[in-house]
Image 1: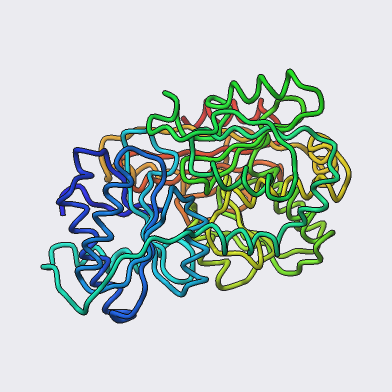
Image 2: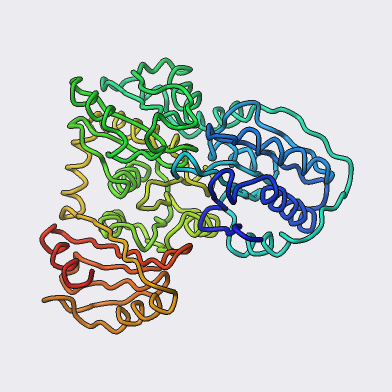
Amino acid sequence: MDGIKFGTDGWRAIVGKDFNKDNVTKVCNAVGKYVYKNFGASKKIIIGYDPRNMADEFSYLAAEILSQMGFEILYSDKVVPTPVLAYNAKHLNACALMFTASHNPPEYLGIKFIPDYAGPATSEITDKIIAYLEDKPEKFADGKIEKYDFSKDYFEHLESLIDFEKIKTLKTNIIFDGLYSASIGYFDKLLTLHGIKFESLHLWHDKNFGGGMPEPKPKYLKELIGKVKSETNSIGFANDGDADRFGVINEQGEYVTPNEIIAILLIHLKKHKNLTGSLVKTVGASLMLNKAAEKLDVDVIETAVGFKHVGEAMRKFNPIIGGEESGGLSIQGHIPEKDGILANLLVLEAMAYENKSLTELQKELENFAGCKFFNDRIDKKVSNSDEVKKVLETFKNLEQIGDYKISKKDFKDGVKLYLSDNASWVLVRPSGTEPLLRIYFESDSTAKIEEFKKILA
């Protein structure tokens, strides 16, 4: 069991080290046993992979192992995004294995187990899988492997969610940075199928992601940002390695934070799509979301950090939208899994319905929420888990930070402290994989954040 640990979204490791044939075989046997124990041998298992090094080879090894155990395997006929595979888990009433390391560096690979509810596996499920890791392989029935195109039903489903005809009325120049990721052949194809013109960058798969990182953050989107700035009235989109996260660049060439996107889409979905229900967000997401929700008379449900918690709340509460600050969201009527392709399309749809630029929608949001919010995060290394507990205890006992008293404390994921100015908070939470504390800050001014960092870092 050395080197196998399921985090907030599956198991990830370096290829050729912990991510090797022996460990992948162990995980696949354990997944097979879990599926058999909970659903029986007749449960289909669908398998997909992103463009990473050896993702296709390891995923096919998984297909062979699980078919030998007796399962019917539907194996993707090409690179597939996580949300596409997840949608098909629900559509086909199947469990899924996705071979991806999402936005991690190119040397990593991973496995996400997606149950038939189409969202991230909860800790309760992954704990059961881990318990089977050292069990010997078993054969339950006669299985088979069939190649399958998962894109068709996903495309049809998105056509029921997105008004592509409305998007066609946009005069904005769309630029899509494929970022060598799994969204290539999906986001661009959906635009093409509906006659929506766009320009593109890096529209091919590369296991090394062009020497960068498959993460749609400004640091890795410099070429896209430059292109948006150089062309009048342009907007940029990108996704991470497996296309479950999104990155959006506005007409000024500025990165639009996921918090802003979630808030803009909440307003759009309620106003133009007449969706009703709540908003699901993590403890690390912005207060701006709470303020926008309050203006819309929408309840807010807050979860621990990680989309598996958001997804679980979405299954329970059926909200208008669920999202996290790291760039993941989904909406009512879709799946309880983050979908970067859907997010990009929804941004275009929101702009088209309002007939406004994204920059204008951002300004309207700021006015609607009542102020602008700023965020930052620092990672603090500690020597061991005892030190983690000690720091958390210190935060728990704080009653004031600088000139501001603590007005409220929340302990659902580490320690979150709300300050008396009603515009600032600090969250400290432990990393799930190493002796590290993540300290998040939000305020209505960068000066306050710098002050909090000096006091607490």
